[in-house]
Length: 128
Ligand code: MN
Image (cartoon, rainbow, N blue to C red; front, side, top):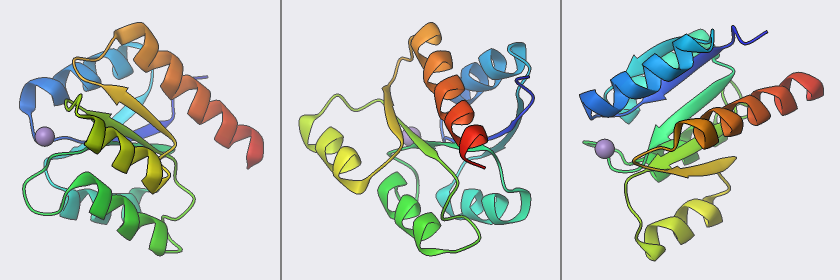
């Protein structure tokens, strides 16, 4: 049953809306933040099943935010899927090295994106 809560951290309104639309169409519930700082607060308060993390954000970037989430016992086990427009090898390497639970490149391929989300959520459900 795909009714898990997913936190979308993304500063671009169009990208946020697309993620929200495809996820809610599948039955997921979503909450959103335009900044990493607010996203971290939401993650602590709402304990989402998954966080979608943009790389380039105003203020703290996605990798810095990921480190904060992992360092906090309240959020350390929440899976985080990086979603980045950057095809730059350097950014991809940073994301992979940081230990994110997955990486999707924007513009997202809707099927691949939903498959990745479902897989991570199922993996977590199985482990809980
Ligand atoms: Mn961005």
